Image (cartoon, one colour):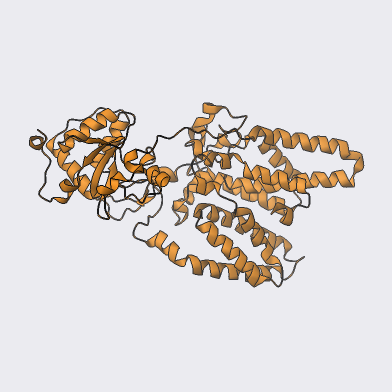
Length: 476
């Protein structure tokens, strides 16, 4: 994309492309968000959008762009939305700047864009209606997520997964290790603004600088933080975060969208340096030294270190062998202890590893809130609604004291099992499994069996019998 739309030098294109590929945000998200890291269509979308201004190819260009947009929509809508905003600003600025020197270009561009828009809307109309208005649709993210902003100090810091990173020293500048969306480092920040000043007469550079600053301002969230301290200064996002669609975006991730703008500016800067070397032989030596030194000082500290990995616990043979099938059908589920969520996703991986279509209670997904006190609240949760038994097991897993097991709690457990349509309860070996084993046995009133490397309680008959009850007398 860079070599076809912005620069002639292959060296310049490689410098910009390598930065975009291994930008701190890309490496950060590679540890847990494969759908966000899969941005291989973004350069193609930029390329084909800018190519719409070519006369006589409105239909062909629109069809190609529509195909790319639909494909990206099924990978990650958030990345597509950010790309669209950036491209919209860039194209608007360039249209105004080029309207006199390139008459008719705007009309040609809009014709191709219209073709792309109509085709994209036609294909995505149904899936988008399901997503935004379907049975499990949500209206905006949870308030605590909508406040996730990039710390102002993170823009000049180095990420934990770069060779210049300082590990836990910078941990407080991001919500977690997968959200280090800025972290460009002092070297690149200085080089970026230096290149902007050097090439300030180039409209494309000014437009890219504006996009980068806009995205940086949006990424700061509703309140601006500096080294973890709330400055009390409201951010640009404070007037945007309640707008439909924007209320489903995580503000800190707008910093991730700065990387393409920076990569293009880097490519343009290297291209300008290459041109100086060619046109002014007398300055060849100093220009080469200055260009190489600046790029190395800015980019080498950002070079990524290997991603942090750890071996996963093996899938219990009870699952891998398919033994769970004798307890579960289309009307029953497997209930793992604790129920899977973002902090304990292992049971969700069991099906993925074994390629078995196992119905399981719990999830790590964006689901609408089900607040009985406010049925209209459909803000997103990252797991199914809280239930007493799932909360109890999660608390035990975290190391909290075990509460007294009463008949009331047993009634709640039975209600939860019926809510989940449980056929079997499974406890795989893990931290604090002894406590969870004792508590669940006390709740259900009977001992589990050790089957296929896991403790198993057959609760299907208990769940299906409307007259069944759990009491201390039954437990005895």
